[in-house]
Length: 293
Ligand code: SF4
Image (tube, rainbow, N blue to C red; front, side):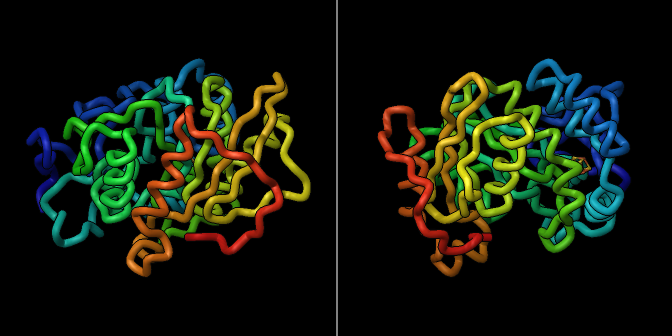
């Protein structure tokens, strides 16, 4: 394994993890982007960000969770999957991907070690992303059905994808402390996105993360706490009285898709319901079925 490897789309050589501002496609950061090294610094930098590009730049260089920083960088250096051993690994937190002015937000769980942590783009380069982007293309949100790597021409319309936790966690399981550390980034993302009227979460952790961010912003959240279920839908109300739909969908993890707990038709139906023209009656009292990955 050399100290640099060629990017699979552009061919440019990169070290792993990728230093900020060195030419990786869609890298939001520059060499001088401020780095959060503690949870307090996450909160301060998130509050100070005055736009989505600045926020994503700060997120993409964050080092506030020692366990996750060590994990994401060790995978990038020594733990690469054999089939990607000669590719550079992003090895940094995953910035959001999609239309910055979109009215719809998808909130996932966290980057996968050999997916976003390798490619630097949400749900890109693994089977979860294959399943999700094919559905986004079928339902009119993506211009192509596949997402191979940053720089491959994929673009989203009317929709942006973020994650509750921005670094790849061991065993896909962030701790409660790590989820809390990362929450200010999601909260600020929502504050800087007043045009968002619909949020779809992939799995129960994203659902809980959005509810926590909403409460931190003094949004009205139904009581008792709405439970995640596939197809569950509730209305959250911002202090300016604007209503935001929160929609649940099973996660696109291999565990769910290989077992057909989540099928392409099921995902397409939820995605189609997100279009502004779709009319769905929100309900807070549908039964929870499980946490969905
Ligand atoms: S999980 Fe979030 S808060 Fe923790 S290091 Fe990654 S980006 Fe920073």
